[in-house]
Image 1 (cartoon, rainbow, N blue to C red):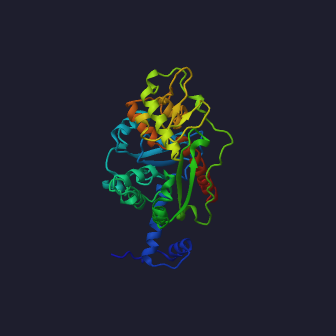
Image 2 (cartoon, rainbow, N blue to C red):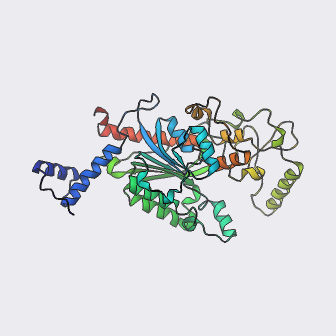
Image 3 (cartoon, rainbow, N blue to C red):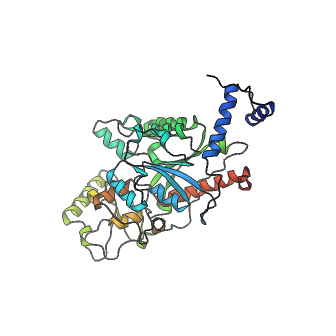
Length: 398
């Protein structure tokens, strides 16, 4: 049944026309009003924060959360997580222990969940599974004759799941992360699809490949995608968001968290060390770059992957007094991934985030994670845009 405007006075209709600035049908008048009212009701960005470290209060959801790279950083900046989703039981164990969540961490299949039940939020965070798009993941799937990208039956459609949540909740800001290969995958068609899906929903998109090595001693390139709802942030203004500047000096060095007396069990056996050296030499003679990654205490490591638990070859440490190099300990891997104590203290862990799963699962979790300090630096830039938005609309005076 159509909604009629017979009960509205002329001043109200004139006001709506002025706000929309176009001649529209009666139904669109009503839709416009409802849309504006819902956005203002749901939007926490217009409120000042009680947090001393941030004058902006915001809520966020943490999708495909893993061990909470987004959660650590955004909570540190004063954010309030209102919904979390993760399916891996070991990651859930770590997440609940670290962040104290018992009910908000859901091991449900987000694809089959009623997205309207997700609480309203300001920022949708999602490091959606990267294996369908990563160079290593694509290579492995090709070798096994399996489909990759959006054709991956298990993980390829999770981006579309994010879009369904966007349709249901229309969050003001999207904050996404994936492997740098996302833009080049399938000759650029994957990125074209992602860009079109987001922009068609009325978002202005900013993306950049950022190497975490400017903040932590690890070469780790990931693409970050930040999107702003145009109907909010581009209404009589422009979005001036910029990704963070590259620091002149790295905030954390490898030597700052390497253990002085690690357990000898982390040293490679003679057999494994000989194998890795022979393997590297064989590929060197073929002109390939495959092989182990050996680094000193002041160096920069290769990218830590979820397979690190197998042999540790990608990141080996020269240990003084030991004849063979060693793997990182799980605690060192935690700090290499940027899960520093300042984040842990936000959740009552005065001595850092504890290890609550096996070494194998810990290595997998860190290898799959986003680096919190990079997320933090980007979120600071997002907050600057939020504050600019509030100032432009004179919301602080409201």
